[in-house]
Length: 492
Ligand code: NAP
Ligand code: MG
Image (cartoon, rainbow, N blue to C red):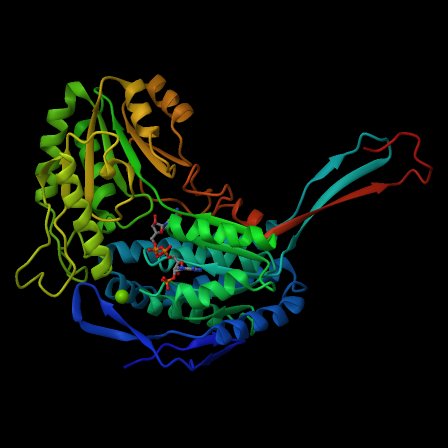
């Protein structure tokens, strides 16, 4: 059985841990893929030291050269695409088609970020004074901590590590404990690309031990985190104590609004894909449908019909649409929310339980579930479930739909289905999210455009696209005076 090793200062080193977590296949718990060590704080410190030592050299490598390492990592990922996608399905559970999609998206991200090495720069500005000018220039921050969730265990590490190192920072990376194998492969790709020792370090371990060391160690100059709000707000608070830059991308409760003129078939396709794709385990998953009263019954009937026909099972099988929950505890959370929904008085239309039988007994499979007559104060309308559960609410008109859509603490993504141009622009103006989709599902994001949420979802820094490097750089502002004379005007 493989025991995953930490990667510190360019070497794969066995952890001194005495305790390990089994990396199980959530579709077949008989299959144990490897053992993840619960590394110590000392091991995390060793990784941080390596990142500190490597920083001084790495920041002096030119930005285009740093970008070319990332370009080589993209090539390496393309060569190992199938292997990486299969590992992803085996340890996280999403279908092989979805895994191939995530890996392709990661290749796109690496390719795009490689080019940022050539585009990195600042602005040139006129001064208020004659014969003066001003420019800005971006510098790296230092060693950064990268802490990631299990649900996009290839793409999220890539969209953080790539801009971090292109900008000249060094990295200590702690992946989620459910997905150590994909983390290993991602780091191997950067190793194959020739990234120098110490620039990227990987430490396996619990959030409470390795994670705590990373967020509290004064040598770490910035922390980029994606995960739950509980952990994110704790990290934000710890960062504030040390005045460390913190980026947090957290939960969602993403709505789809369907207006009465919408193409209903298109809306049904998009909602089912958004709600049940990746087993609903996406930060951008559709978890609420807000539909105009006049077409609600029609939409609901079509949604239930399509959802009942989804095939749930092991994502390695080609005919499967929906994989398992990542783990027993995640599955129990989903089942608990289904119970809560019933008790709150929502109407269960389909699904609602764990699946059993020979195909399902060994995995964490929950039937795709739809609740109707959900009211906005119910917990299933307010809280992130992170599983295959969809809530339906009805609205009088666009105004009421918007009010319902915005009545949650989160603000990640949202969709509207309509052909009314005025309604579309009103939706864009009023909806409180960071990513908007028109006539398409709430999920997905392209490598070259900014991604992130508002309100309780995000702290303002965007990921992906050109905006991604902002978090990983400091701006210096430079005033140049070529008058050669004493200043007459006060500068303020
Ligand atoms: P999580 O429980 O918050 O864990 C995220 C990461 O934080 C893991 O690596 C975890 O380590 C680590 N961690 C836990 N406690 C820590 C601590 N005290 N100090 C430092 N690190 C700590 O989240 P998750 O369950 O993996 O992921 C699901 C969540 O991620 C959902 O809420 C989802 O919406 C969100 N998400 C958001 C986005 C976005 O872009 N907005 C994208 C994807 C996912 P362990 O694994 O060892 O516990
Ligand atoms: Mg696993």
